[in-house]
Length: 215
Image 1 (tube, rainbow, N blue to C red):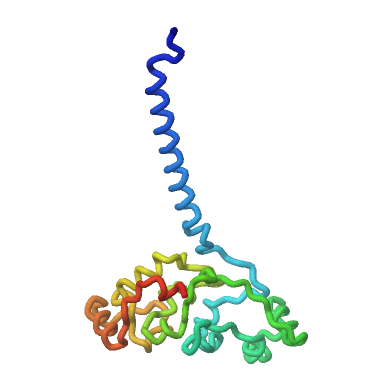
Image 2 (image 1 turned 120 degrees about the vertical axis):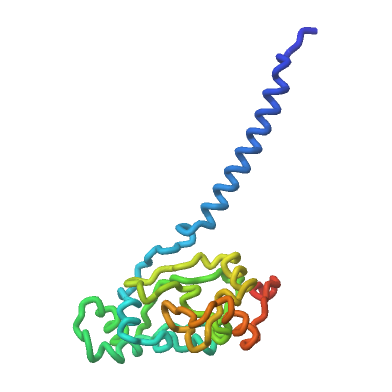
């Protein structure tokens, strides 16, 4: 019986299968990088807001983070300011500024402003602001230099590996509690010396078990 396939067919078939597998691996890798990349995670992407609030402007005026984010030291959620907080100042200054019309309307209509969330973790992740604040982790560590953001954007991916890097090595990121809200914080001594001291003083544990965040 005549040979149906050329003797090179086996080589071609093996090469095709190997090429297909390689292509699938490369495609999977590219998809992994894309979906976990900075742009896909909205890093440095400015979101539209009902009022164009400048963190940079307000921080440079000396307004403390806790003036607006009132529950950051005591609860899981940092809190968003009610319109009354904004108007405690803006009933006196910039009273007729066009950009503040949504804020004035919110107060007049007793309707809260619907801010677009910039920083978030998935619903299946438990995160508590107060624990991190009281253990000496600065706002800047996750939120970046908000004092340099005319319009706030997401500074970090907040993916699991980002959190784990700090949980595994808290001594690299910890700072004195009184410096938690300081932007551009620089330790007065080497972080390699100060970090382990603060970890011991604040009784910081290296929590890396799944149930720490996935409850």
